[in-house]
Image 1 (cartoon, rainbow, N blue to C red):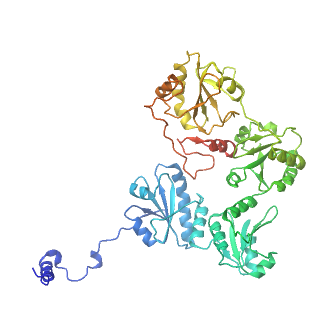
Image 2: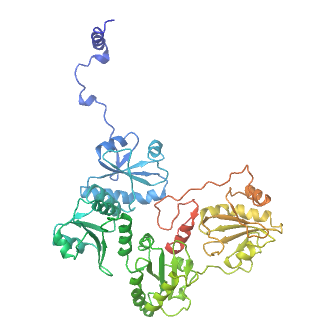
Length: 540
């Protein structure tokens, strides 16, 4: 057939068929309607069919991947809706949306969602490189995180009045003084400003403002309505502005020299990245105790950035902090020093009065290695060895675990740990099974109330086997925690049979979670142990 005749035949066929009778364009009513995106409480509800449309229609789109059964998602929901309302009221060009992850597995897989809630921020329809949301979980924090991405993260200051108004309007204000606003140091400054949501940022290149604030070169200045009132961070002329150094400087100097511990200040205390904490335990209802605050505060400036000074009121709801340090409320006033990386704790040797001089001397002594850390231990129960599962504490652990005539299998647990509770019946059954074996001891130790010099317990539950014989040998058990496998381990002298799995599957806690609260059902880390005591108690 001639190629010239083919188009003609196609036109004739089209004219003779019902579906070819249309001569003009389709009317709007006959166009297939584009799927409308539903809304719930001001939040777009997306699916795999509508995400693409949402990305096309909304240049700035925050997507929350949630699960209907997730407790943290339920807690976030009202704050998420409030944030949407805040942004809509001020006409900020950003849209909030959500995706039911379990119901939309293709989207969850596409964006690598493994925990809930997960939030991702999409710009200009870019589906392949969303930004992970790293902000707070309350409405104003969510809104501010988004404002600083769709708008300027720092206010441009042109004159003295604007600068003073900014400083007067907030407790913490950071102003970058840069002679050239095109310099790459400015980009570093603005990048930090995007995420430091608890501070307000401004920047200027005006010589008059340099002069007003006594500056001759590029400097980042923190203005605050407490303590020293101002802290300067000069920009290194050779190396430029380092993001990490500036971040550490701002976190350190934005803290009060003395911070009272409570649920509001706790997150900031542990986000300060100052590893050494000095705690003054006192009763704020007693005038004699309150008088000690002056001397405590007088010593603080000498250790700014090195030691964080914290006041713990024993008359408030801080029993968990007292317990973590092995104290009773009656011990106040007293000092304790802790390194939150090693979790080593220190107490004054003399136990004298709390004065500026004694506080300074104690800090120097700890920092110079002149004070030995102390270990917590409960008292040995009178009936510690009367039940199938023996009870160990810090004071009898060495004697029992390293007895050269015994094979000792120990469970290190936390009272709040879910996994520990789940394996308790198997551990009890194991102890009953071997209670007539004179050379085998099945024991347990509460590692939140007892500390050991031999090693640190890093997770709960931790199972360690101490075989008989010299050499203080320790074998960590990492297989399944059922009676049959535990029994085989003992019968094989501390070896897991090759046909058994080498390690029971565990998960890492998903972040962010409320301070001190591990994800339910997950293995608790040693850091969580610490936060359960010093930061606050949660449920494992």
